[in-house]
Length: 348
Ligand code: P6P
Image (cartoon, rainbow, N blue to C red):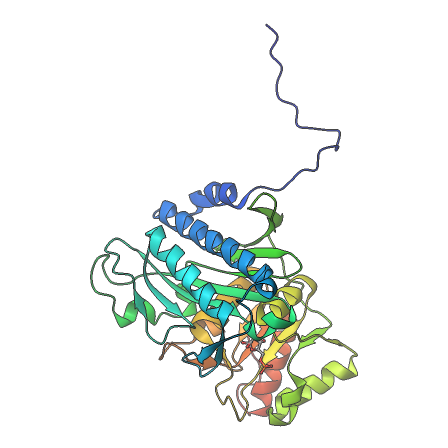
């Protein structure tokens, strides 16, 4: 009987598909000295829900789930049917998965207590961000943050389990339902991107160890609000024009963030008269993307401090958001602080 050592295919004939998400999570479990199995299972539960939402997003135009749901959410924003469906899918997946004790969702006024006596984790989620874009077939996204509960497992959910700074996140990520569907996440050991292969129903590693360019030529802001912005923000935007940067803003944070993360760029949503604290939410939008930004060598600030340092005071609180390439964020941060006569040098 002849036995030969396995020789990986050298011909290049067979397309080498990346590692599946499941296998990657298992490989990386050793990054966690404890509770590794539970966090891995939680990430798989999120991936499962995103596959279902992906399917429903892709066929929204063909079924009766496009358009408005006919109610508004706690933000007073008109809910789209897919918003509601995505919320149901993620809540169900997280509840069945057994690892989560509480959920903060953009679509839920209150904290949802899953009554799970063994759940170690709290998830803050925007099930479907940018959903006004659904009916016009523009990319949308899911954004999530994962925290470990602070109070003993099995005890009642308390404020300190929920109101945690972004620096307390154990994991964070987003799903981008775009020309391809991607899952990008971090557990504090770098950022990795996975692309969904519909025919196999699997996410495959496509963007290992994402490193954000330190600067860029893209700026993302709703210039229709220009007259509402603080003079320092207007100065920065003028500077972008002088330097002939590209304006890229599609009204979908996850898509704008993802493009800027890969190509270099900055996304700005400053305070405005309509939204004096900014529009984006701290707990389930800004914190997750800020964690990913910093893990890939980029930055995220609110105009005064790192997003991750903001002490939450209310569930759906908003924050101004300046996020993207380090040099671009540092520049606008310095302009804001100098204009406001505060500390002259901003050190990250
Ligand atoms: P505006 C979508 O509603 C969202 O939360 C982000 O995805 C997007 O970047 C922003 O708001 C768009 O807001 O005020 O420019 O329409």
